[in-house]
Amino acid sequence: MKSMLTAVAMLILITGCDNGVRDELINGVDANNASDEQTANDDAVKQDDAVVPDDNVTPDDNVTPDNTVVPDDNVTPVSVSMTVSVTTATYGGQYAPKNVFAVWIEKADGGYVSTLGAWARNYKSRLQRWYSKSGSGSKGMADAVTGASRTNHNDVPDLTWTIDDIASQPAADGIYNIYFELNETNGGSKTTTAKIQMSETPQVLSTNNASNIKNIQITFGN
Image 1: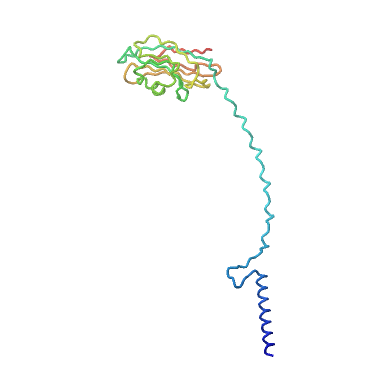
Image 2: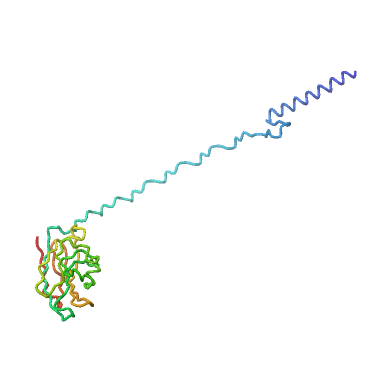
């Protein structure tokens, strides 16, 4: 009888162990291994079909190429030339009749273009405006008539401009000023201007004859 009770007890113990093993296998948990964590097959995470491509973004047909930008044909041909004649007179300066004299071109905004003539080899700085604009007499001098300081006020030779800029490119149409500067002293110089309009048909807009820089004549030709 005693051996029969012992056998029943062992059967119950084995059966219990089998259930435990089965539970571990089913749940994926090893009760004897704390590092063996239960895992879950999360079927709740599904593809979000609510996210669809945004077909509301369409090319902006309102943006069109800027066809208003066209090549700048507003340029005077190089073949156009301008001739300037002028005379000077003494004003009784400390070195009179000796003098320094320059004629050059500026744009309407004051930008330097080119020198037509300059007589001031060793005394360039006494022509204050021209000296400053021309880089101490070094820029835009390729076609200029140059020489030493003048010993008198004999006639200035005719000066020619082939209507180009400091880089020898055709000068754009617009307003230009011809500057004339004269000095017989170590002090301030005397200046005057003539205004021209460069266009398909160039023209003289105004001349400011001064008492010491006068008889200004400007002509255009091909």
